[in-house]
Length: 218
Ligand SMILES: [Zn+2]
Image 1: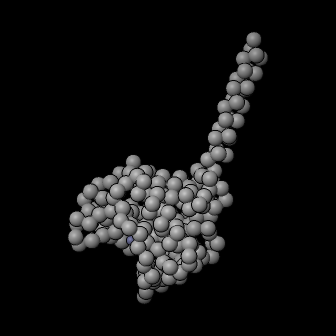
Image 2: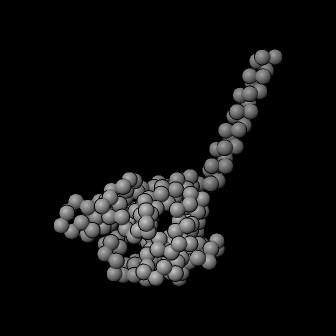
């Protein structure tokens, strides 16, 4: 009797783990894809601010959730920073040095895709919404920006049209495909209300992951 129940338990455990493995294999839509996430700012550079809320912290919180979501799909995820610091190694042109080092890390990684995560800000506090930016340095960038924008539009109308921007210092130096996403305006009270919430951050992580899946499955 005792042995029978042990065998039954072992059988049930293996059945359970088999179904787990099965579910996981089906979910690995980004298996082996190398994705570089770049949470903007850090350390001395807070980015945009609104009272006690700092862009650098919100960027990192959302990026970490995104890293987890992408990892669950089988992606190999790198972060330009995983704490509160910047990447500069030159105090005289700190910002340039920070951005150059981020670009160098991304270029040298041979990643399939990079995503720079930022928040927008405006003196006009009525401005709000997500916006995807791309540089036309390669043909894929616009395609990624288009697919990401369309994917995000499926769950929210709080998104602007994608925008080409060839002047931003960092992405002029990045040759691998990727985009920059401004996930909302920290200067707008409705956007900030959402952006600081765990649940909304999680929702953003899920929809961006979906956008990346859509790009690779095109
Ligand atoms: Zn920023």
